[in-house]
Amino acid sequence: MSSLRLLEHAPLVARNTLRVPATAPLLAQVRDRAALEELLGHAGMRGGPLLVLGEGSNLLLAGDPQGLVVQLDLRGIDVLHEGDDGALVRAEAGVGWNDFVHWTLGRRLEGLENLALIPGHVGAAPVQNIGAYGTEVGEFVATVEAFDRSSGQLCRLDHAACGFAYRDSVFKREPERWIVVAVEFRLPRHHTLRTDYAGIGEELAAMGIDRPRAAHVAEAVIRLRTRKLPDPAQIGNAGSFFKNPQVDAALAAALRVQYPQLPVYPAADPAQRKLSAAWMIEACGWKGHREGDAGISAQHSLVLVNHGHATGAQLLELARRVAASVRDRFGVAIEPEPRIIGATW
Image (cartoon, rainbow, N blue to C red; front, side, top):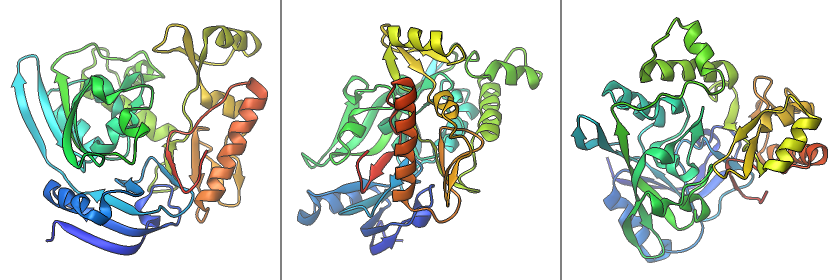
């Protein structure tokens, strides 16, 4: 099988989890890093728009992408160093994220259990600094190997160089520059399990677990996500569409006085607080709302859904109206998590 396959005018409706129609002018399916370097070393591919597409699970195609679309089918996992206290593990970009989480748990490595069942590939994890149930992947990323289009070189970025922030990284801020090829994770054998976030403790109790291990926490997370979030295989969605906004602590306190039920969480900056976007969206009456085939999930108000034949533009317009209603009522701006192609927010 060739390590590089080029497809012109490639349909993308089956390559994004919102299942919206779009067409790539040129789609490159890459099966090893030598083929990637060959592709990007070609004079015609050195500049111009580029979209790296994994499962398409954190993406809204509001229009056709311009330029090159790259799919990386790099799937190896290697243990680079292992000791009694943990291991340094390298996973290539095309490895399924949930598969990788279970691979680590099967080897008694902890840290990623709260991130179980998040869709997508390993290569996308540091881009978004994916997070759930009180954990962010950046906490455990030691190094990211990425192709730098500006230099034409394969680079190794240590943790600090990745610039991790809430649902953010240098890779997200410069998407036309970086192509993540592999990620190295430093994972402990034992760490303090996070069971006090968003119902995990209650789910463990329902499971009859009073002394949980990491695998138990992962199972609790899977059960919670399965109940709360719609399955992309059943209805088009990209998971949580909106980020929880971070605001000044004084504004959060004032909003809590006005809306005592509004969930407020600590933020990395002690002068700020994180507000529940889901609660505010639901308070504005959007949960379960539907306009044609574009809608908001009846299971979770953060999730934008495609009931069948909605376009990306229709979904984007609905999302803008949701955000505008939250801003008008609460004075708080909410922003999308997924990358938007073909339009601006």
